[in-house]
Structures are given as structure tokens and as C-alpha cells.
Image 1 (cartoon, one colour):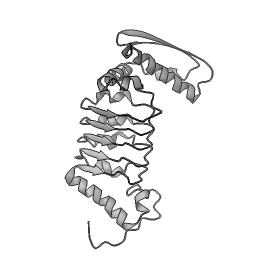
Image 2 (cartoon, helix red, strand yellow):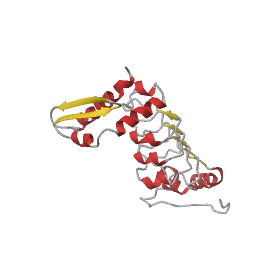
Image 3 (spheres, helix red, strand yellow):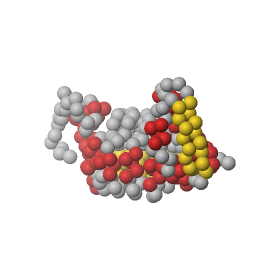
Length: 230
């Protein structure tokens, strides 16, 4: 980074995403330090963006195709990029560390990280983890501790280890997509196989409000996971 540059002004750029507002608002030195992190990542293949008060994942990350470790712990990130392109470009990523962020949902597109071995998502605000992550065959560490709202996978499954979680994900991927459409109806009867067993779900009730749809999905998970707890 040039030693002659003394001031960078990025004010009045409402669409600016990189550097993010939490960094840009701190002035030139903070902006230069942020840009230096990306320059360092090109040589070390590790991007460290922890404790920067970030609210989003900087789009620049998609340009670092050789990065093997990405750390954005202890920020204020509530949502991750859902577009496939962002994650598909990170084909060398092996460690994804997002602990201590108020993340409430995870994009299915993370399943494109074929080399991912470690995913740290403890102390977040997650409600579920996509079953599509079953295809992450290299994944051997998945930390979901201290996610009080997490219902899928159930805690009982998580305590039995990642292999058991994978079996559950595999079962869920076999559930007909029609189920996800049917739960919006008032009266639903669904029968589907789970690892050789037939399970019948019946939903009969009032208007399908958001909380009722959530309860229906939770019930599906409980039925699918029941065989692991016998």
C-alpha cells in the first residue's frame, strides 16, 4: 500500500459495500488497513476480517479464489450472500469461521464449497442448517454450539456427531419437494419414506400463518430424526 496516500474520502456513496460503512466511517487509516487485509490474503491465502463491526460479507471475497481460510468472527453480520457465484468462486476454501454473528439463516449455495473441512457457526442466531450441506463430503468439523433458536438439526442429533447429522440430511433430501408446498394448505396429509420406514404427517388447522408453517417444518424434522433416537 502506497505510503504517500494521506486521505481517502468515500462519503456520499450510499451503495458502497467495500470498504463497508463500519470501516469507511473510521477514516483513511481504517480503510487502508482493511484494503491491506485483502492484499495480505493474496499471498497468505487467509482472509482475517474479525472484529471489524461488519454487517455484510464484502463482495471482494469472491475475487480471492485461492483463499483457504476465511474468518469473519465477532462482527454484526445478519445475513450471508445467497448468490451461487460468491461461494462457487471460493473453490479452495477449507475453513469458514463465522462465530459470534447474529446470522439467522444459511444459504444453500455454501454447499458449493467442495473443499470445506471446518465450519464454525457457534454463538449465532441460526434456526436451521440446509440439508443440502450433505454434499460437503470433506466437512469434518461443524460447530453449532450456542444457537438457542436452532431446531434443525435437533440438539439430540447434533450430540451424536457429524455422521449422524449427515444421515439425517440425506433422509431429508429424499423428502418430496411437494411437502414444502403442501404445508401452506389448511389440511395436509403427507406420507413419505425415511430410511426404509414410512412416516405419515397430518396437519389440520387454521390459516397457515408463519408460525404454523414453522411448526410444520419442525414436526417433519422430529419425525425424520426419531429413528436416530430409538
